[in-house]
Image 1 (cartoon, rainbow, N blue to C red):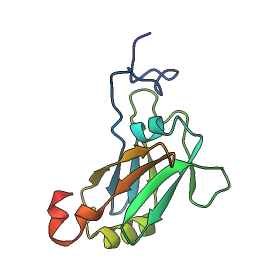
Image 2: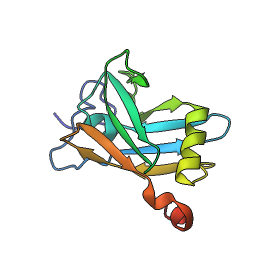
Image 3: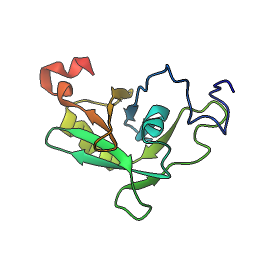
Length: 139
């Protein structure tokens, strides 16, 4: 079987020589949202629900699998990656405003943050420390 980004049955699988590049993209404004990239879901081995744990002091985000009733649990839509789609969005204006203050970055046009998968924690970790103060142009 060959890999196809539009195949509903095989999207979680990918060629063995491809490395994961998990990311989130944060957008503010009228339709404030966080776009969760498909490699985040692949890294977590296709969970039904995910949660975002935030360390406001660093700031950083850990995205991991969770139970449906957990606080901040989000259902990963099974069709989210079908037919060429490559992500799903979480809408939360207040969360994004707070994240903007903590990181020192205005998300007016959207900002992409790359993370790494931590197999010990079974989570994708995204750090924002380079986005504080003078270094905000790096984000």
